[in-house]
Figure 1 (cartoon, protein in one colour):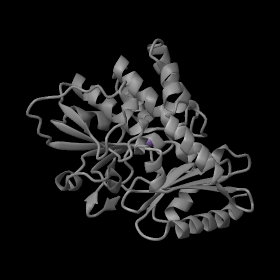
Figure 2 (cartoon, rainbow, N blue to C red; figure 1 turned 180 degrees about the vertical axis):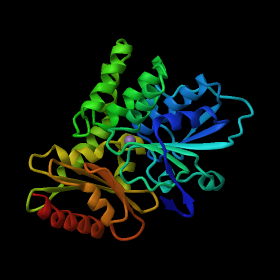
Figure 3 (tube, rainbow, N blue to C red; figure 1 turned 90 degrees about the vertical axis):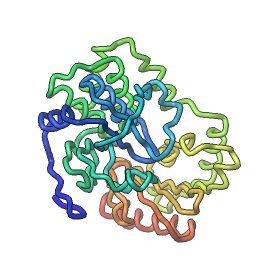
Figure 4 (spheres, protein in one colour; figure 1 turned 30 degrees about the vertical axis):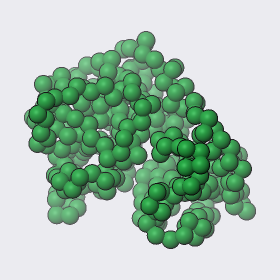
Length: 330
Ligand SMILES: [Mn+2]
């Protein structure tokens, strides 16, 4: 498959590992708005490369939330000058975000991913669009090549799979995902799984709790009761003094209502643009809504961005398209 003149080759786990072994001084790129999956996959790769005697660094355009401190302990090197680039959990080059220009343009040798919407921007792609998480794809690579789990990689992979399955509540939590996590837990039964689950999926700051209350009060539910939308103006984030990562997961709020099939979250950014997160219930394919607006993602979780337009108009367009598409789904 071709994109921008570069040919992308899909490779299997053996070829991917053969490629990893030949790397030298690597930048591991992960996506903007970093989540547990890209962080887990990036740092697990960092550990695997370390064991192969290869120097690497995980690079993200945006700061990695302190919430992930358990898995982001990396080994740093003096005079580290990257020569090669790989990417983890990045479906499209533009999702790398605002990286320095020379990093943005650099050839990416290998992408490890699980997004059906992957644009084949890398030279080689090792992926499985049926996998719950990029971390599950990496788990498969390790298993196929006899790379043993370590405490560090096990924790990274657990965090990634738990994150992308919404702590095993989304439909992507299939037998393969449970099997991977079963193996991880069997190999390292005493890792802090329970504490991490609570920290990643339950605990929130006081500001965040107040924001959730406000958003739930103002939630807009369509006449059919099937589309629910929350709009988060940038000023509201400031009022509650919230950082971008503190509002992570806010997109799951609309899905807490019985009967809602499409949950839409419109987040206004500092520059006035809007980032939209979409969540789907049993019948909806929200990647179709995202694609309609130039975005992409998974069937049950996807997103798109608007660089112009009034938030009110954006909210209305999204709701209208959702309601229209829902007619075909239910
Ligand atoms: Mn992912």
